[in-house]
Amino acid sequence: MPRARFVAVGAILVALATLAGVARPASHEDAVSVRVNLRAPKQAIDGFGTSVRVWSDPHVPNVATSPIPAAAQDAILTALYRRLGLTRARPVLDPGIQKQLGGPFDFSGKLGEAPIAYVKQAKPYGLRTVFPGPVYLEDWMTPSDPDAYVAWAMAVLRRWRQGGVELALYAPLNEPEIARDFPAEWMRQVVRKLGPRMRAEGFKTMLVVPDDENPDSAHERATAILADPVARRYVGALAYHIYKGDPDGWVRMRELAARYQLPVWMTEYASGNYRDWDASLDWAIRMHTLLTAGGVSAVDYLWGFFGKWVRTDTLISMDFDGGSYRGFTPMPTYWITGQYSRFVRPGYVRVGAKVTSAEGVLVSAYTGSKRVIVVATNPGSATRRLRVAVAGGVLRGAVKPVRSSATEQWRTLGPLTLRGGSFTATLPPGSITTFVATRRS
Image (tube, rainbow, N blue to C red; front, top):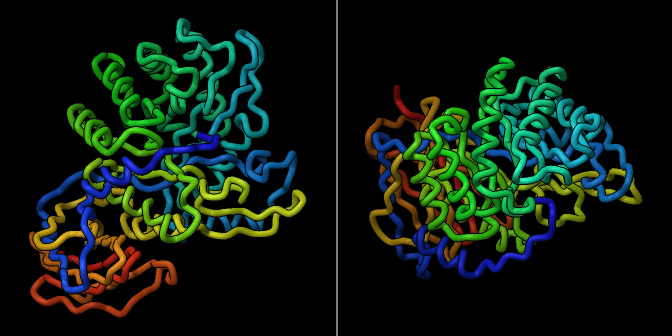
């Protein structure tokens, strides 16, 4: 998670392009026709979010201390949860909560008290789903002693409850392959043992597993957990990151989750390549492919806010000068994420969206709260015409488009007229457009 990533993206981008249907160039004359079927439900959407390091964490400004004013905290929380529409957070727990086996617990500052306070602070802004977990294990933890970890995790859960946050979800370990490569059997034993301990103390907490660095490692560990009928009682969601592997692994995770009727989440990704709008369109392609081919119910970027020293790993880049906070800037990934997160709300359902002529534009569709949402990304270098026909329900009123590009940020465009349940639009090169329609009840 919080370390430099040097990923060979070439092969992954080729696979993404193949799955997403953007493998060939197209001209302006190639109109893309899409049929949206409201009676072809796919996965329910659980929301969009990020991992979180708290305001007082020295990692954020990259200096020992740098107070972030209350007004700045309010502005950032507003930008993330109200404007951007994020609803999810994975608070990071660093090592040091129990430095020695059998020793005292320390929940001061960023080890417990500050993350609890952040969750309570962010909930009025729109935070709904919280699943904290350790980014790395304590040095004394070993694969041969899952019981010691379980006792440690119970102490964490109790402290959060004492602090006023009853956790519905908990992630036992971030990237077990990277965290000293703790094996699948260790995680199976942890889930199998932690579940009954939680229930014995009145916790209804479900576990987010395995939260691994790549889909292939996640598949290995998740398969072992779910094959155990006792352990799988306590699994609330399957989760993985996409720093390695390819979209075929995303599909395998989708199929595994479907076999056990569980949601699958992509809970962390960032790229050092996202330095400008054109490069960041890769994130739009990934979001589309995760939601469609990957069938994920949630998509989380790495950080919601962070100091600009991490460059592209954050949606909001914070500026510090000599340890003093100076302001923040939304990154291109912020605007791209918002083309989904502001409109596709938790509880919405993805529905079928089939390209029926031409290719090169990525289109997905969602419905909920009497709305139909269509998201279209044109990653190519030519303007494209889009024709969308909606079947399985009746739309009323006009279609309202919102677009982001290298020169636009959530720009509200003129309304589009519906004709027989269909509408047409123009998609500039390198753009992502969200179309909002009202469904007749």
